[in-house]
Length: 526
Image (cartoon, rainbow, N blue to C red; front, top):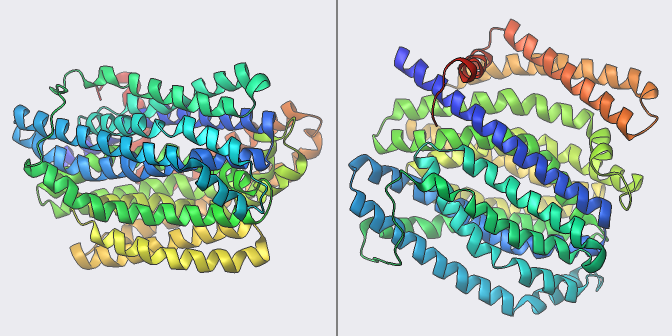
């Protein structure tokens, strides 16, 4: 029992490091979006960049970020358990070189067909999208797919060796490079500077992770062994995972198509809203998953069902502990958050109202997007890729119908609501299936924890809403004063929430406090 407690404290300690590193990465991403919004506003020009970036990013998420990590980590973890360095190198080199070749071919095809893709998007927008601008930016950024695929593979190796900080910091480097290029080149080449920043930044994202490979025992060689058992296993898992994650990306594409068809700047507005919503999701939920997934994979490799259940419960409770108050706070403060982040120069008050309204509906699904990460990883750890695939494929039709239905009443905000509802439906279905597979999941403990979280969150919401209504008239004289008010309200709200979760004797806050304390009094190398 004590061993489990000590290990969970170590998990929280590693999670704390990832949270800090990821927080800086996400903040730098928001700063990049602020720069883009200030220089270019939200228009068909920014829609062209959004789509030009979305296409290589779609394949990056589909292959590098998701397939490699989801399929690679369980197999690689099994190899590490056998301590066979020759086989590990053979496996890693084969997978690396196969994926590089695949991504080069995909990049070349998209490079060649960039103009026809731009023509299709322009027709959807009512012939308002600049095809030349889209094609130029798309061709500049498309080879970031190859680079980011390598980055994703390195990330999965480092995470398997419990090295989390460098991969979490790496995206910040790309964001900083993008910001620098916009500031230096925007006056001369306009929004093309964003595309140049992305491709150069992606190179540095790989470079910053390379030192972490020392000590892993891996040596790169251009070698492909198609007969390697693990390589065959990866590719047997690849197609179902690709289709499963492809369904998610199809949903994203459908959302963006609807947004583009609704008029100027809507694709960009939808993207900005999701980026803001993704700050707590990407920082806290991804941090928890990043640390837990190798542990879940080890439990699955050892057929440790009890360990899987404990990881499931821990992941669900920790994500709920952060995402429930974050979602509610974001709904209440959506307008001042967007105003502070983006409203300047070319980004107007009208744009603020649009993006903040979208943010409310994105926030509804934040908890469930986080929980979905846990559920999918558990199925992948069992090497069960068909179940997430079936659920994801069924969500395409649901999302299409809900997009069509809600845009009639809520315009582009209806797309965000549809996204949230699809996430909720997917979580419910996967929980039902998982419970049938491995039995009791500790639902009572999770629900009891969620009741405490909800009670503390309700008190927090009452406090921040009352403070906002009472104090806004005294802090509405400028951007700095509004920012100061927002910081005060968020700090007070967080303090109130933490205080009440402590008074409710929640296990989650005790472990978080212990891990933070451990960072200062005991050095643990992760």
